[in-house]
Image 1 (cartoon, rainbow, N blue to C red):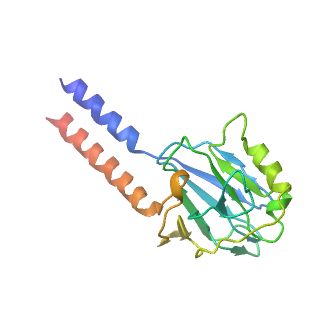
Image 2 (tube, rainbow, N blue to C red):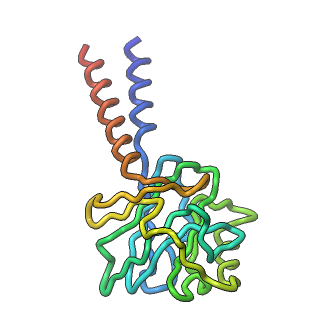
Length: 197
C-alpha cells in the first residue's frame, strides 16, 4: 500500500514540473534560435532579446507577418550591447496546436525573422512558415499593448501582462508558474510526510 501511494505522489510531483525553453531573439542575425521549439502543455517559452531592437508577436500560418487577433506581443525590447535585461515569457496551454510568431521591427519578418512553437514536422512546418514570411506583402504591428498575452520580466518576475492568446497560445504565465511551484512543494511535502509514517 505504501509503495502505490508513494508512486502516485511521485507521479504527481513529476507531472507538475514544467520546463522553460529559451529562444534567442536576434543575436547577430535576424533569426529566432531555435526557430521551432517543441514544448509540452504547461511549459513556458522565454524570449531573450539581443541588439538592437526586436519584438515577438503571435501570428497565424496563413498571415505570417500580421498579428493574430488576441495574440501575444512583447512590444519592442531594445538592447545596445549584449542581451537585454528584459525578457518575455509565454505559457504553452495547448501542445497540439502550433503557435506561430514573428518580429514586428522594420523588415525583419520578411527577412525571415519568424518561428514557431510545436510546428509539425510535415506540411505546415516552421521552415514553410519562415519561407511564407519572406514572401509576405507587408509587416503589421499589433494594436494591442506591449506585454499582452505573456509576461514581461526584468531580471525577476516584475510585471504580468493580462490577456490570452486565443486557442493556441499563452496566458499570463506568472500564475501558472506559481501554481506549479506550489503543487510541487505540496506534493513533495505530502510524500515526505507519508514516508515518515
